Amino acid sequence: MPKPAFISFDGIDGTGKSTQCRMLVDWLATLRVPATACTDPGGTALGQELRKIVLFGREHRIGTVTEAMLFMASRAQLVEEVIRPALDRGEVVVSDRFTLANVVYQGHAGGLRPEDLWAVGRFVTGGVEPDLTLVFDAPLDVTVARRAREADRVEARDPDYQRRVQTGFRYEAGRRPEKYRIIDAAPDADTVHRHVRREVARLLAAHGWPVTEG
Image (cartoon, rainbow, N blue to C red):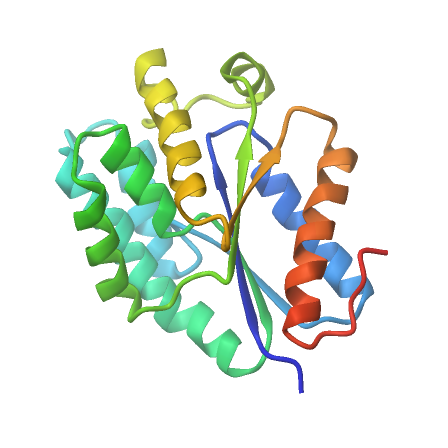
């Protein structure tokens, strides 16, 4: 029997990672690979409420530690309600963001200690972590131009903050090359999807799924 697999997509806003999540799940469906997609923060009724507060609740002044813990609380509920049950069923889970986002946005860019955020992340998820994280990277001017909606609280922060975010993602990806892959997100969506498919096919083959890049 194939082993379950957990894949997360991350990176700076505007790289198209959410689109790539949908494209990957659609591709897995054509291969009849059972997959569950989720969004972090969000993905549960409680998570959606927390997402609204932390990303769009402009009437609130939210400190960096509070912001980090709201994201963590949403993730804890997501693991309990969605991710762990799907893995227990033997499925492939595809998550739009996971703990890495906390480490980068509130740690590298926000001034909290990344190692503290990693520790809290391990606690709230019960040690659940992705088998593969694809980190989408593109020039900041490209990501801003691609945004097709009003910026949320985090996206609206100044360019220096966004540069720290990008540097943080690159640094963390470099620390764990066995689990993290940087994906050049500057090309068109179909080109990026081919790169995504190649990385995912390797992981799933290693987990016993009869999958090729195709």
